[in-house]
Image 1 (cartoon, rainbow, N blue to C red):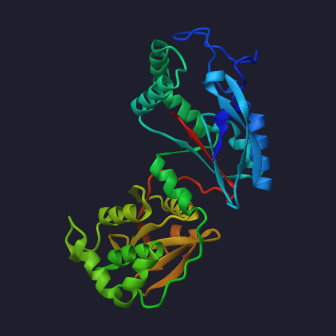
Image 2: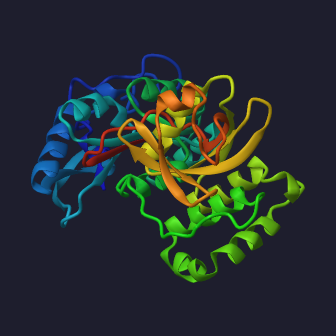
Image 3: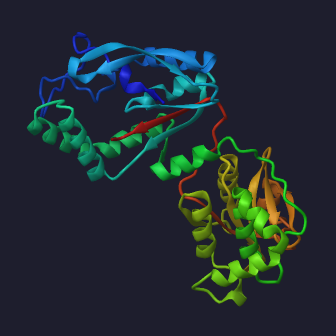
Length: 357
């Protein structure tokens, strides 16, 4: 963990910005990026990526400046997190240098952020209590603008749970090998088959346990689905519920019928981040079959088809021209994907996070 807040300017620096209006008028505005040293932060990131080791400052709020230096060593790890309220200011620089793995703006509700900031600042005696409360209220009102600024500078807005789940999986292999015989045991259990396979891909112990009795595990999973007649197949909310438990993040339904190109891009972005997704296919009139998107093959998708247990390649052209052919069905109907997954990022060494707290 590289603490970007340690790259603040010293309190005696004449270039520090001041609060011009409202509570705290005349005091140093530590929420202004001009109070920070982006070039020093970028240099430290570059050295850490190149050598796995860097000497960084230790910033002491009580002394209003740097109190010493310390060594940060990656100890062989291939990635690290750089976190701080100004991380968004160096996303573009990290991207140009080829160091960026992903960039996030981690958000909480404004009231939660206000309270956490107040507790921290009171504990560390940063300013007089009344100033902290008034200033905190001002920052709470502008939090939406702070988040929008981070997003405009290349950060993906995400909850802590969403970011954690994605980062855990960015390094996973994109190609998937599944044992033979993992096909649906009857005509209506394609959704349950997809869910069981999804769990097998994420849990080696579970995979070893259910592989010898795969059909039984699928039927048991199908019986556990609720709120929908099982003879009609699998409701999307059942698939979303189980994918949420497997991947550790919330899933939602997106209709693909009217905008197949957009749905394909969203599936590709999801798979490119190492996350699983479900794809409903069918005829022009009805969705008839549930499949599992397990990875990418260049610009194409890799999709597990419960009808025969094969993993097939689906191109964007097949998707948009309604010639998918999964389970014999040509048309995409809907997708079950993580909420707010955008375009995939290049795999590099730095995972940068910005916290509005």
